[in-house]
Length: 207
Ligand SMILES: [Zn+2]
Image (cartoon, rainbow, N blue to C red; front, top):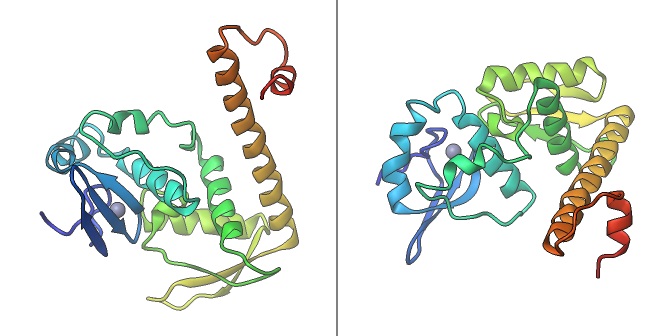
């Protein structure tokens, strides 16, 4: 097997074989697991019909890896479901939000430095380095981040402004509410009743 990520074509940095799948570490997509069959089957789809969507899978894998979320083993059958994930941004402004949250997630102190490698567009579900650069410019334009260092060939250094910090915290709260909503809706469906009342009321009834 080539040591190349089938989703983004970057050289993978680690590969571990298991009984029925392989765990891969890609500098762009992060950590993910995939079956050998999928490694054989997927490239024909990713380079064909889904060529202009494969960066979204890279983005999803990276997000799951960043937040240490449970990652289902990718198979020849389930990879299409990944494209329907509610985590995938549906418009450009949601990509900007994802990038802001990434920077916030890597900020350990107020105005702490965050290194951004332009060769990792998956951190913002970007198509390529150029789009990532433009999304960063948008965050600078919104005065949510400040660029501290820009040296060609090196990761750029940014930090969050107070407005950027507030916006990121607002987005985090929205995500918590959305995830509670999905959890609660599923709970209500599993209990065999529809949530005709508010999700809030259902939430109170959860164990
Ligand atoms: Zn990759």
